[in-house]
Image (tube, rainbow, N blue to C red; front, side):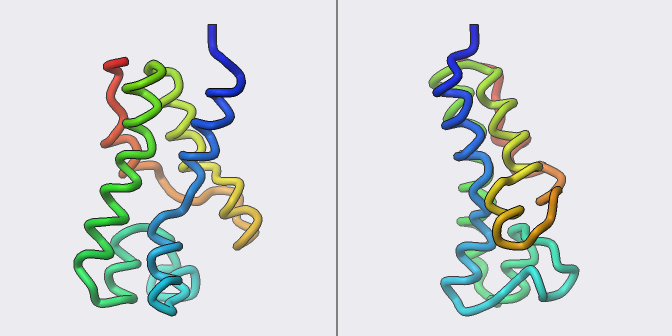
Length: 112
């Protein structure tokens, strides 16, 4: 049985656009830069800082790994869903689909 509170927490965690946030901390709006993707690679290109790419990719992977590891694999799936269909991206950019979910899928591990 899936706990609704943990499901919402997993979705919210998965919805955080870490690459967008890290780029904004450097004064760059990656939603209007390069290919307009709000992922780690575009954040790297916009900021010119490798650590931004590493941090964004690692955080995107962890946001699916942590729920899957601690609460079970379905919560990791929910986090990946949150990464793809992010409520925060909808609020900030008015886009329904945030990304492909690649980084969070890499972090997802059905090991819970």
